[in-house]
Length: 336
Image 1 (cartoon, rainbow, N blue to C red):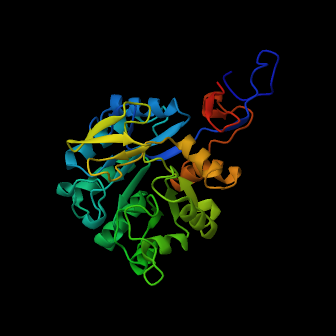
Image 2: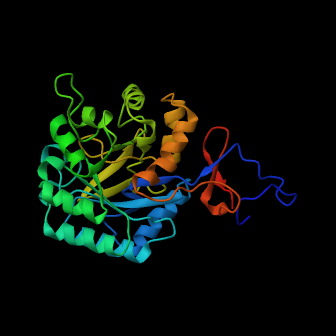
Image 3: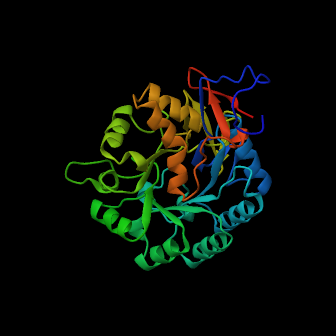
């Protein structure tokens, strides 16, 4: 089948339990054994996308994390060459982050927002490429944020020590997203709500990793109960083990899957071993969130956050963009 149309006698088996627009994942560090930072080439990005395509994700933002400037520039070149085929743009996560909330990011490469990053952003946006930049807004000059926002870059607060007041100021200065809410930021406190509290009460889009490891289900339910339904979305934060081997190297250190968690030698989380459809399933089954909302969080809302058109299902929709799920909400294949 090439496109969505009424069921005919030629496809008597085309009766999936659930058909949804192909999910869009805005935070994909790797897949199929490939880490974007380690192979920021068109072939590398296509391999990552192919791994996630095989697990039910139609479109991705390949994500390059904190590294040498040359790695970010190579990733930008790769996206310019490989855009299309489900590679929607580029997510640059770091290097302009708070050292105290760097997580697995390499402290050697953390630096303030600079002209070199701005040049990469300008080059991508001049070519019409959607770009998401995760940074600690409290470490950025407001004029720099304004310049990036004016280019059409989607600015996201993350890996940050921002107070609630600093976060609110950032939202007023053009920051429209928050990267993996709860993770790599101070916890919500009743006297110091911080970035978490400000984000939940804001109109910003917030990304959530629903793998059962990064955030407790109760915390996810609290955030989703309080935040705008049309502003909460799922991300995987996937690493090369998704659709690949059970270990890989990050900054020269081995990262391993252990009991479903990706951990470094000290046992600390180092990205996620999960795909977006699994996040959708787990948020519904384990998190108790309505299925309709979970589907939107993996499909329409990520695209709206990046100012991309929705992938609606209707007559004429390419069948290759329609994911089917079985009655256990596991990926069953593409309609076409």
